Length: 83
Length: 218
Image (tube, rainbow over all chains, first blue to last red; front, top):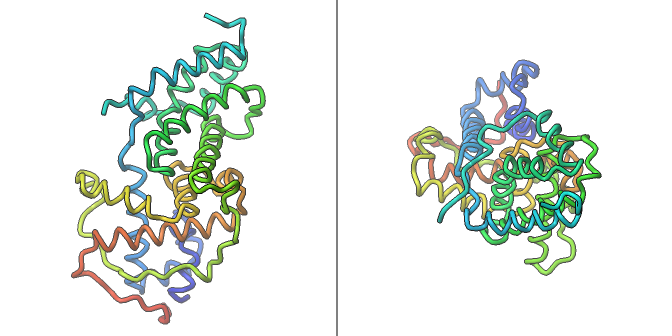
């Protein structure tokens, strides 16, 4: 297996934790290829960073008008539930 | 700026969401509000990551849940409630992108990306710090944001849905009107481009190695 071939199968290596067990070729290539090991490690860390990254919380001042808009639309759709 | 508490850091199960949705479908506004409270944070983050702008992201949140009210009756539980809501939100975010570009359609489904044209890693080095340490540094948070914003939106949307929001390849393809193979190629492109950008900033140059596409192991 070449680096090019591993690159094309990279999603499987990243996403499927059993890929290296199932596809011996991937494991053999990675074991002997420092650049590919580093690229795989970089990508795993990239994904972890974005998954754990900044939460971008919704602004509080938006909350009131947002909830009022929902209430108005709800009352229009379910008039009997008007409160 | 004040922010709403992150009410969805521990999210209830899909079954529980569905039970609450069933109550909402029968006209229970309190149940609907509970779903909104559970999901609004995820919808806002999804929109902000795609659009990168507070006002537009707020609009997407509002449009999403108003649309949810209108289409409550049509939900058939073929996916999780959260996936359904994220799909609605993604569609509104894409509409916003189109509007900003003055387009009536956005070329998300054309052309079909090819694996053969995926860019190869260029700067290859181990990172000097762990992701946990990186996240503690404000300037690196900005780096993450700008790297994502600079990504072509065709790839950014796929990365946000698949790697950040955890939608499956099938769900992402259905949401964006793409083939599953195209989702996979775009995800690979997104991952490789983000890796390249972040590694240039975070890589330890003493560990840099040269790419060699020709060699074969073992």
